Image (cartoon, rainbow, N blue to C red):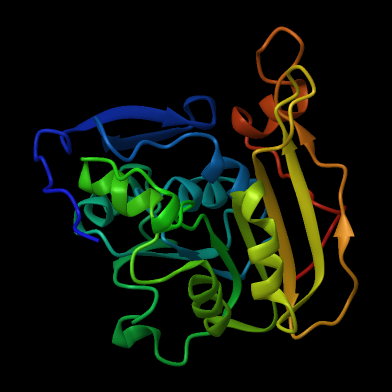
Length: 261
């Protein structure tokens, strides 16, 4: 698939904020823009002080920043293949004073940089490209196209590469489209146990969930749990109190109580 030509003007960053203003965050003015997915992903990672976390496909670093704000003593490494986004991500790390604990590395998940040789993280969190090539209308903006449409790595390979960088007993947490849940579970079969599927319900007019969080432990054979999930919006269309506590106040999102690393 031929990718669109990048437009440098599109990459001119805007200054935005995460977690109700606790974090300053620069991102492209157009193209790849952060929504709520990486914030929810970070909230679901049960990291503790001293844990190491890989943010696979880190983009501009939103998930890493949110996790670092909630768990101050963990160490996070973000891996991002697009140089433009990696530079913005590293700038975001420095702007928020997190340079001692968070690092944004330029590299391909399928072919990790030499420094990743032998690396085994306690946690891997990931928000993979959500669209298969066959199902996608490709954006004319390169950063958006690469962030949302699978390239060389399909979903199964993406998750396999995440698991290779996860230590035995470590925890993988991902957010993805609900209509691709069967593919996620197939990729996890025999590799992850204690799986939790956690729907994110729109909460408006009884609509089905469009996103799910999935979490599991490497080298475990524990059973799968279908969790009640989270209702994102109230009847008035605003965020529910539970969602607001996560998105604006940085609270943790326990997918099944406490799942220790």
